[in-house]
Amino acid sequence: MVRPQQLLHQAARDAVRRPVPSGLGLDSQAVRERMVRRLHGDGVRHPGVLDAFSRVPRHLFVDSALAIQAYEDTSLPIGLGQTISKPSVVARMLELALGAPGRGASLGRVLEIGTGCGYQAALLALISRELVSIERLGALHAKALRHLQLAGVEGVHLLHGDGCLGHAPRAPYDTIIAAAGGDSLPEAWLQQLAPGGRLVAPMRAPGCQAQVLVVVDRTAEGLRRSEHEGVLFVPLKTGAA
Ligand code: SAH
Image (cartoon, rainbow, N blue to C red; front, side, top):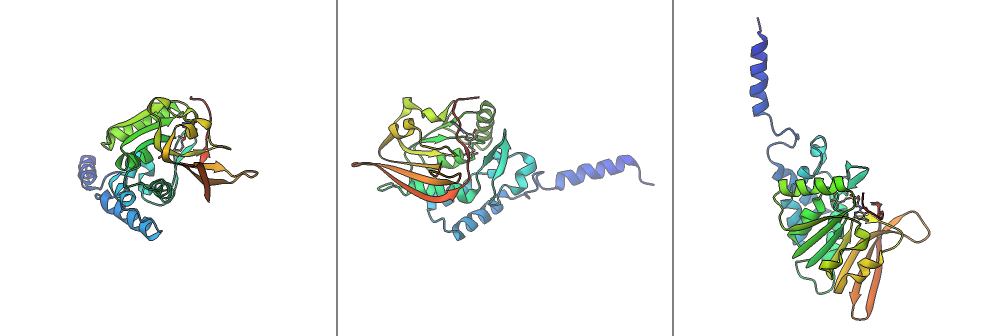
């Protein structure tokens, strides 16, 4: 006869032996390296970007029920109708930012708009000298604070507020990177961009619903703008909530 206690003891022993509940297996580093190899295969070449992706535990930035998908090239919900972008898009934006003329391995002083769950902020922290990141939704701002602490990322200035206003007290920024797109680039971002600085943001292409990645450089001759591939980011909204 099988006594219920025995089953419970067996279940307890199995639970200890079983991999982490995320379903990632015991070695999230190996899963992460696979993602990095895939990014490399897709054309991501900057060593600093690949290194950052191999170091930041993306599964700590999403809900545990989604952790099993954390290293797939997919966007995931982070609550309040917002999403974390897929790794290949984040990598593309970081490479565009690092591709500014005369830029070394660091993005310098960075302003990020749309902290979300804090994942991109954790990547940025590894390739910048200073990072200010603004989120308009208080609940996500609080979530990002927790995630960055959990992942052991320090020294990021997380702010709750309207990123359309930028953050003048620490301006100018060598890099401005937005994770939400509107119809035009807020004036404050252009004003807070340092000489030689680069802004990378999604923006609705004039006259249509589709978004494209826009790059703006502040050169000696003024602002130089270029448009790149189509993307799909959440809308840039004004005000904080
Ligand atoms: N980089 C984030 C992506 C988050 S999605 C990550 O790694 O998780 C984009 C975020 O931009 C959302 O959280 C949304 O609330 C925020 N957002 C939209 N408009 C904003 C604004 N004006 N100021 C600050 N954040 C904004």
